[in-house]
Image 1 (cartoon, rainbow, N blue to C red):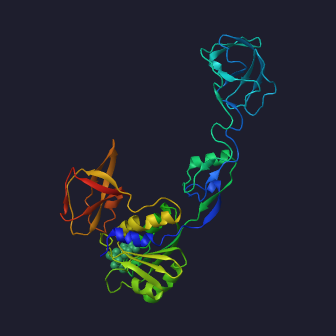
Image 2 (tube, rainbow, N blue to C red):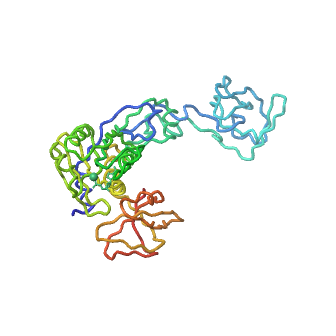
Image 3 (cartoon, rainbow, N blue to C red):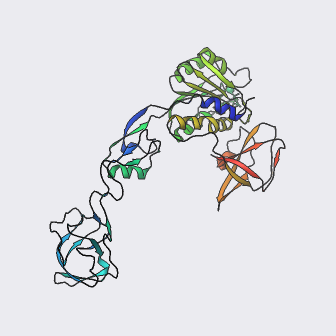
Length: 397
Ligand code: AMP
Ligand code: MG
């Protein structure tokens, strides 16, 4: 069995960055920028007042009485240039009149109600309460760097500069196929011996959560012709995920079918629990194929370790293998076998450390316990026992 590190290296060799695409800003949240975005304008575009108050023409205005020459509200531009002894009543965000040195906030003034204002600022300096043109960013400077995943507040900044479209990496296209004669759709009541397809829908959601575009191929039975048909469809996408049919059962036909479709095996089986039967290969077209174990939790672990970082990297996001963090166990845990094991837990960040409570997990068919889990701990046995207070590595779910 190859180690999970070696398996990742074999996968990583096949990562190709997606082409780029142009999307409107209002559809860009979550997308990854494929080239740096620069702004074409200074921000602010003019010297602007940061407060409601009075623009004045001299620094030495403490206790001065000034003549109010004009009032400027939002959306207006001052018409009168300030001269010595004059003041312009100005609102937050307005462009400063010519001749002003700064703005005294209204709270530090008294309106004498005869067209004059008394300044009572204790200290006043040039440029006080003014944001100068270009102080935030200048035309031609980089606003958003390459490979940044756009967030709502980035959209705000893009709109400030009138940017309507952005260049982003294309979504990866991922086909998902669940296989097994026993499977029925989740909305169907299973007959004796049947179970609902839970792995397929879970994989679709996992793909969506990392920004992939999914092609759900539904359920394929353990019948060669029908599997081959579905596989041909799936190979139209960049990545094909097939759940089930890759272990050692007599109905596990997936590796054989993949070979018949020209998909070359790169590895089969990994030193991993759950997830040992994992199959990985590449079609002539370049489509990467994962044969994932049928049990949903085995598939989940394989997805988190291998598929998620692949999809992220294809679409320009950071995605290294196993972004482990260190935690401290809150209770003892025993586990079986000497494969690298991933165990569900509840992890909590507490003042600079992470407390980890392992859950009472019943194995790879146990999805219910995972509903309480938010992380996985990595366990390397033997000895097959860790204790409260031990340091453990974890990845977040
Ligand atoms: P397999 O890898 O095909 O041998 O399947 C291993 C186990 O996972 C079997 O007990 C299957 O019934 C179960 N299983 C396979 N596919 C799915 C699925 N899509 N959803 C839920 N369980 C599955
Ligand atoms: Mg099966």
